[in-house]
Image (spheres, rainbow, N blue to C red):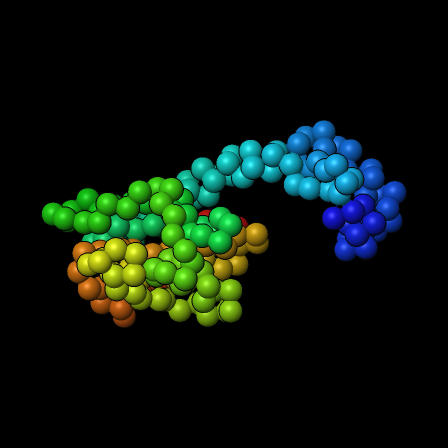
Length: 185
């Protein structure tokens, strides 16, 4: 956007926007394109990459409890672009077999319990979402949105090789989502 458009959106004068642009550009957070429009700079990506480990670290205790209680692989999924990205994954320690779900795995928000839970959270629905075989045949998922953390669109969930008791596991997932939201605020 232009400086004038930014001033209008922020409800401040153009001079104030010019004073903000300088330091933000100096830190790589903003840049001006050939037409003079303000664009996000690469510094925003570096800042986001530094914040991701802190998010994962804050979520790990609740994810460990969830994985052990449910006997399924627990995960924290965040929105990046139009996709869900597994930011943290914890496998249960006591099961003979469980789903291997890699940190960094991506999927459309419209498929799988994690993405569907994020979309439900956008519309204010905090309940658990269950899916079967949407991302991988034979995999079952239950997830709930992580709500109340400003600037974060995320879900917490579990994935297993067998159907999950939606009531029991749903309650465990909701408890983990609440614990994660508390840890991150």
